[in-house]
Image (cartoon, rainbow, N blue to C red; front, side):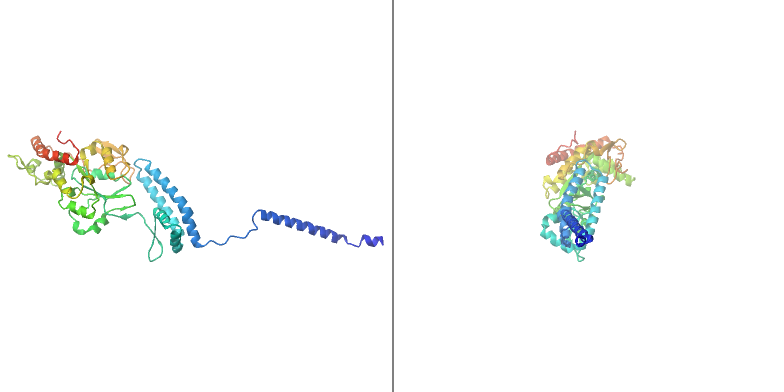
Length: 407
């Protein structure tokens, strides 16, 4: 009887129950530990394509664009005369960012446009524009890239005068990152006006927002029709006139012509209608251009004096940074071009750029600039000074600036 009670429950069954309880306890513990790590929650729902686009614009673009723009612009503007290498790096970075962003956005343009409206189209469209996009779409339904800007009619023109220093001024100004100028003289308002404004605009370089389009054609100042034509294009056009001692300017004008036509008459014979009487020939262009007050009267019929800046050709040589400072102020630009940009070339006798636009090398004007003037009879020079004196005095009064040509 005792023996049967001892072996009524097999030992294996008791051990199995204990093992089962321990296993359940272990599994329960592992489950709670698993849940404590948040791994037992459900997976998130898939994100819609429009949510992805909106998430990009609202977070990535908004966070990245102001920091990038602020960092790049501060880096460039804080350094006077930031060089073309930095500008190239700026464009390269911008184009690289545009390409990478476009590849991710062009897949869902429709959702992008709707999300722009929902998330505040003005702000996000502005961010997209700064980043190099246009929210307008063509028939293909894809984003259009602004690229390197658009062509615009000039907001400022160097209108004169011939042999006054207009080429030097233009080359100096082109160092400024906010100025884009045509290299060649368009001669639109004197010779090519019949081609129309669209033809004229197509000659201009592409500009970005905030940049100024410029051109220079010195013959405009003495062209009777030019003021009215420029006014018809835009009454807000800013005009720049580089003036120089009219006697020196006339000799320089003659020197240029002589280099092209060695057989022309002498300067003395061209200056007078009759040398015996001393009557100056004002029909000769070299003399006629220097009557600045007469030509300025024509411009003041259309433009107020506040829209015309007169640059001293002499000071452009002796103090280029000072004159360029006045020009930059007149154009409403930051004074980027300073003394650091120039060095004086003793051989040529005028200042040169340490770094030209788009180059890291020094740059001087070409061989056609700074020619040696022929020797002119001192009596003829004095006759010309006497002739110009009353016109110079009137010009000083009109401009409110004494240029010192009669001292």
